[in-house]
Image 1 (cartoon, helix red, strand yellow):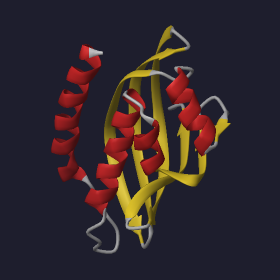
Image 2 (tube, rainbow, N blue to C red; image 1 turned 180 degrees about the vertical axis):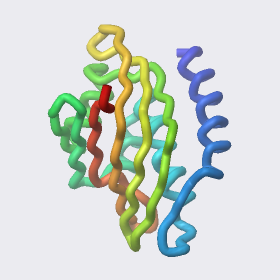
Image 3 (cartoon, rainbow, N blue to C red; image 1 turned 180 degrees about the horizontal axis):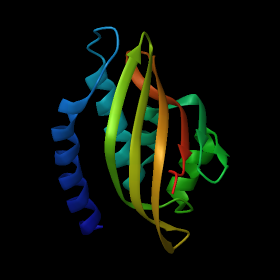
Length: 150
């Protein structure tokens, strides 16, 4: 747990430093807020709590995995809380943010160490996230992962 906390602090510093590379559409100032929500989700996936996940995820979430499984909000949170989906580390690179009104598209590369169901693994995938402004904050509405071409 101490290793997770140290990694979270280091990764947060890297993520904040990377915000300078964000892009946004339409001259909006919402791109940094969307990037901050995406970062909070990354942290919550490593050290999940129901409250943190609930605050970041829309009720109508459609969360597609690179293997084809599609989660709802309830199943996404349940898998993280039970350890069926357990991220030890998550590194985000090549992130872009494009805001269009009350929606935002976030693309990035995710590299992670996992411990799904107690079994160590590594993940390297491309992610598309769709965020929606709801009640003054940004919530994850959809997410799709794909394996990068080899």
